[in-house]
Length: 355
Ligand code: SAH
Image (cartoon, rainbow, N blue to C red; front, side, top):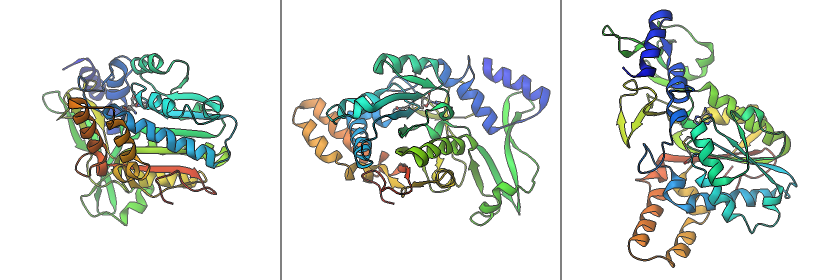
């Protein structure tokens, strides 16, 4: 067993099985042995590739969408331009380049990045220069907030519950006879906070709940409801989670989530219904959940793709065409990834999204 697996095994032996959320917090965020704390996981040489790393078009179009929303809301003079989980800073760099000519936008923006990984913070500083970094949304300024989060929410810890009659048992991480980490289930108990899920589940169904995702959404939505702005949340997931979506990725392949904590990426599908509920409770509105491909087509990716293609030829042109397809096609990222905005209740959602 590696360092982190051994540490968790010692702890479980002493105090008993831990929840999946506790396991994920350690596997992803342990200060010295966690996955994100120790590496830059992105790109062909890493474990996974994200939309901004596929093509500059992604960040450019999102930038213009946020800038248009800023104009539509009457060009607030000072605002927070924020990204949650900016990775290598690629999306924000493309966003800033694309919005350079939007009069007054850069002058009014204060750049804030929510990032826990020291490795990726250093990478972001190299790409973006000056910014204010935060460990969580809670310390973002009380000001109009224009925020983007791409593949951020899927990295937040979840708990899993399996329905058993009118009660639930929780998936735990415990120890097998040989001392290795293994999944188990807690005894069934009624859970009042899952009462509403009795309506849309059957016996044996597994559901996933992320308290950190709900509280991050609440922090964002409170600022938007109070001061204006908009958030674009892009991730894989759907309206209400159903089933076990926990996934471990290493070197672009799926692996066993318990095999090597700290060395594989762990994600779960985002339950957008839970985020929408948190946004409404905080007094903000949200858009309809929209497939990424549809959203990008509506905000003009095909025109942008044609403009960029004019300067390309040979393998660069082929790669560009493949990237466009990868971002938008229903068989690739176009349908798996969804987009939802959070915006003030008295304004329309950003371009490309319907109320
Ligand atoms: N948005 C980027 C990177 C996605 S990877 C892109 O699209 O390329 C997930 C990002 O979220 C990484 O930057 C990771 O370090 C960060 N992250 C993961 N968990 C986090 C947490 N709990 N708090 C803040 N940042 C987190």
